[in-house]
Amino acid sequence: MASAQDQELLPDQTEGFKVGEKKTMDEYHKLDADDEAMQRYKQSLGLGGSGKDLSDPNDPRHCIILSLTMDSEGRPPVTIDLASSGSEKTLKDKPFKIKEGVKFSMTAKFKVQHDVLSGLQYVQVVKRKGIRVSKDQEMIGSYAPNTDQTPIYTKQFAEEDAPSGMLARGHYTATSSFVDDDKKRHLEFEWSFDIAKDW
Image (cartoon, rainbow, N blue to C red; front, side):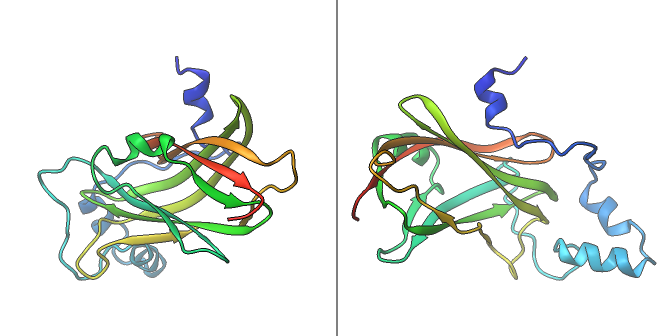
């Protein structure tokens, strides 16, 4: 049975939603070949287009998260580089500062290889002094393996407001997870930030 923390880092389930049957790339290509609507859907996933598949046969990973960037007015973007193996292990010890009350958005860059990635979501749990203060999740979507025509996928998340006020200022820890419809975690990492009066 999964621990409470493991459950906390999974996306909330929509009642009545059932994940579709997993299919191979060949099955997707052959699926409803004469159905025009299905062809448009497959093209929206990046299937059926031309382009050389960039999947690395020596790398078994299905989804490779390259970076997570915070954009906000008044400061240059802050990028968490996740491309190098193990780079996420030191993030918790290097907090960055967020000005209270500021609007910001996050952007993920990632690659998909070998098979269609179905229902990728970003889940973030933020804690202050060990107590959970928020759980946010963002649907990223379903994607075909990258090709030379689309070597990297980018997804900008909805804009958010940083908390404000004297009580909101301080140190926070966050655990972020990229999870697909099959509940497979492609990356999970801890990081930290400080809410301050100024940058």
